[in-house]
Amino acid sequence: MNNWTDAVHQALARVDGWLDSMWTNQGYTGPIAHWWESNFLYTGPLYDWRYEGIIDGYRLLFRKTGCLSYLYKAIRAADVVIAAQLSDGRYRNSSFQFGPVAGGTPHEAAIDAALFRLAEDLRTIDHKRAARYERAGLMNIREYWVRTLWTGSGFADQPTNPVLVANKHGTLLEALCAGGLVDGCWSQYIDTCVQVIFVCQVPHGPQAGGTIHRGIGPSRLAIPIYTARAMNGLVSLYERDPRPELKEAVLRSLPFFARTVGDHGVIWGIYGDGRRARSPEMIAGSGDVLRLLWRVRDWDSSANALLEGHLDKILRQQQPGGGFPTAAGFAVKGRDLSPHCDDVRDVVPVVGWVDKMFRALVLLSDAGPTRHKPIAPQPYRRVVGWRGHPVTWEETPTDIRILRKNQVVYHWPKGQWAPTIYAL
Image 1: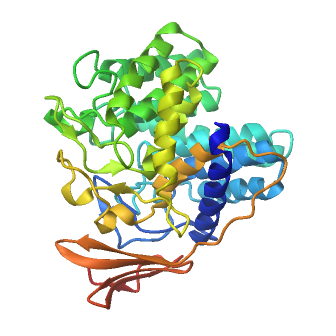
Image 2: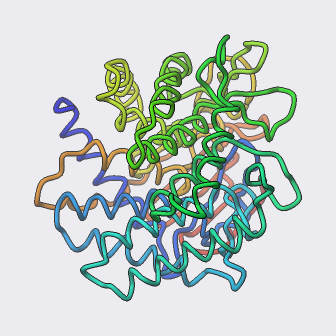
């Protein structure tokens, strides 16, 4: 990856500066765009899977460089998360796509995984803080995942929805592995997570290698970004317990990723009848795919080739503000149309997607003993669309605005819990 060294380091410095612009002393903020919901009204701190990539990314940067400023950023993020833990083990405001609702999955297990990894690195540096992180992660898994979501055959999507979803089991698998919860009474949960992923992985046909998202009913959509999360869970377990069937399942997924890389990022998915949902192509969220390809690059040469091609596309789309756009094609989502970044939901950089690209870039970097200096976000504007009308998207280091006919219809001063103008 030496050809990408300078570009990756430049991208990291810019996204680091952008993340700083989204930080408050209560956590990371900002509007959200998602396939399931778009939330531009609540912009305050959430304690969801954004902390997975942020904590882990800064933790890894500290390990690579030895620079304490990165460790400080990982710790301050972890501290606001455990301060948001409720008495029942859940995290406050943990439902990424829905806003300030507790009990988000897989978001809570993603937090646990990051806390466990940081605790491991802190054990000889700050034992008391490491113990607090471990207790928080363990409490969430015991009280929420096992006590509330465990059905005997897997972990329910929600307390009121018993469907078993592969990517959420993959995320929990990563948390269990990161916490060393793989033996004894935990082995049944490990084995069940694996079996759920295996059952959801398609053996043949146009979806072969991908995992079906059971949570969306008869469409039987196989979604690359969620398949990547399931496969990353298997890789984490394989690193602790190298069972051949785990590696075989991951290798079966590689042709699926090759078929689902688009012009901008990775397509949303492939339906059971073979139709492609080319729109939206996920850009920032495809960091999970990059992470998987990086982790298995020595397993199969196709992973490395796919990694380099995808990385080149992603780096060219980083915004002047330092973030990465969410997607291309939200205006025609779910359809087999050529996607373009022409919708507000496309261009908004979302902390809970950008964190995944941030962590992937940290993995790809060969940062030495010196730290980069965060590059402050640059103001920029872009004409896009919203509900059939042309609008102008603007981001500065301190604000996000949307204008229609030169009138501000949306204004969010960064860090505030709600926009000061909301007339979309």
